[in-house]
Image (cartoon, rainbow, N blue to C red; front, side, top):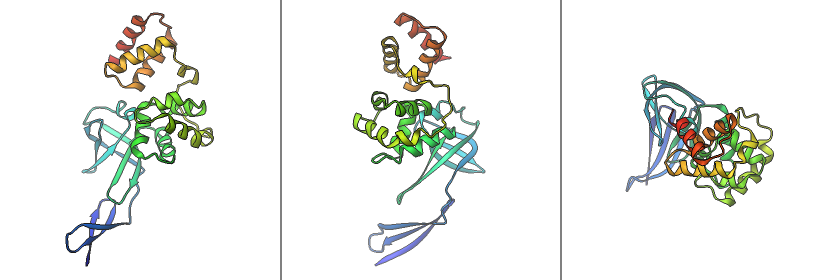
Length: 232
């Protein structure tokens, strides 16, 4: 025996088929689902796990990569995010991005076999959109596999499946491929700052900016300048 129940959602209607004996859901059917493309409202909760954005009195929980998280203001400020809506039987999850470039990279990455939204968010938490595109085009397995959760084989698969597709993308940003080839000094400073708890793509951006302005020749000099920039 089965029982059919309808659950009203702000995004449509969820039809759930239950086992009438023990009340366990058997199947789900989403009816009239609205796919979000953008949310604009007030940031009422901010954490690295998720945001809550108040839009007209309704709070939407959104997961974002660190590349977006660090660019957002404090709680209470206005925010506007591009949204990717992931629909599964057990949940509807919203993923938010500050720029269209980030959303584009995310949608490309999750098309790679064996990669889901969680890893897609991880990629943009470790690399900017420009850095990712550059790494794929140059087949830089080392750089992509440096993202937590992505091993060498996964990095190779990402490059294999995306290299031709990603060449056609026009990704904005001031990242230049030559900057990816960090010197041993830069790598040592980046490693030291990661051990101090700083986020990797913020470190790499800060170090790259310092090197562009003036190339420090000593470890302590570059480390001191990077700490100053990261703390500003």
